[in-house]
Image 1 (spheres, rainbow, N blue to C red):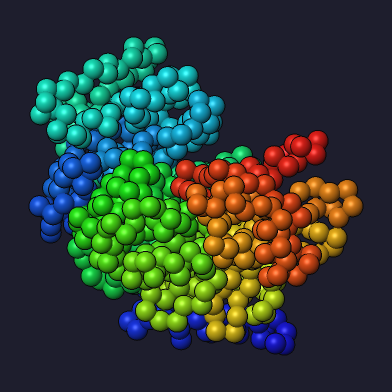
Image 2 (cartoon, one colour; image 1 turned 30 degrees about the vertical axis):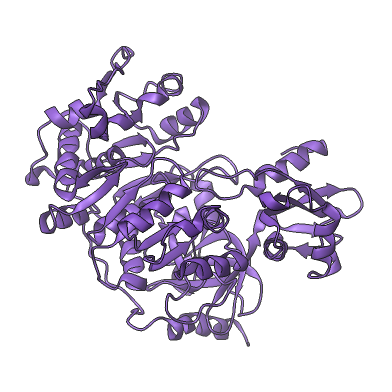
Length: 572
């Protein structure tokens, strides 16, 4: 390919659209309305449809909507509105969904907090976001009280039991008593707030500027340093829902979703919670990961949609009871947040008959930017094609320069789902964006390439690249080979510091139960040697019962890499 103009001609022609499934548009129209309107519309059209099924308790769209309006009324009564931030520190529960939409009705911005955070991490996010209200779980009391900054004026406590009617039926009474608040603060019960607060009236619903007003302030997991707040506007999230809908649902409604992905993470929030509300669908909600329960419910409720991370699909195909459940109702299964090994995809599809497709996205892009065609040509190992109204490209990691197809560089994105900015991080905003060809491009930090047909491939994170004797070694390529070994359940490869080679590839491996004690490190190295160039072969193998994972199930290479740096006496 010739000069810069030829390269731009390739990307601007969007060659990927020729590979879209029938009916998928090149561009979408996104209404400039508040995000809360999707709940308003669905509740008015389908008030008696189940919105959430939580451990046997059904919440209809009518109850969901009315409870959200009551929570909004509570916030308004406390003086919370546009410009204010409330923190939701909950697992997947009806309370999470109600608090989120209630805050949106009031005009506030929601910052979800990971339920597994320590007091230090909770306090950091509360202080950095300047949250004024915190909604949290009674079982988190000790951690929360150790973390509360003075900026938090209101704490609303709830419990898993608040939405479990069978406990009340046997005479259960909520024993948790909100603690005595610090001077000037207020502690309340969620159920009391919903019961006693007047619902927000239509005329009092927030007047939102969708392209400017921030709906959710999502904090990145800190895997690349100090967590940063990602400002996603109402328009960003709405655009991504329309893009997801155009890709496979095409306006259809009334699905059933697996609600396994955590909603405090943008993947679960947009692709499951908001998308289900948008399509008047039902979510089977799980407050914690439980693969056996998921399989039972797929068979029981005839679930259609399963969004998950690769480790969840690995757990399904390796579960000893998987053949006891009928999983054939599944229509579309999407994998994101981490690379999907081809061997896992093939095993899952053979086992369930469902179509499993790899997608790609980031917190900063609401999150979806790429997905493989559901019906059309899927290229194993590819993250797929840019979704409608999105232009993706490969760029020089250091310069504002787009690279031709086939050349490895940094994946960059321009589209309506790209965040407004990082919250209070002007220097990082300058590094994250650049202007070229009249567009604003976001740098993803992922290295990849695009083929002539517009299919994109990720080779690895910039920071995960291993430099072995001057060679560039991408951990994902090695992991793909390892996952094809019949005894390997999970694998992660990192660079181990080495005085002669710079770094050597080291593989951390979790074996399947039936293979433990039978497979040696030498066997794995020999297998890799027969499938990889010599410089890519792992020099060391370490077996683990399981690999460290994020709360969404993403294997954390960072933790393994930091272990090796500490062993070498180097700073992490």
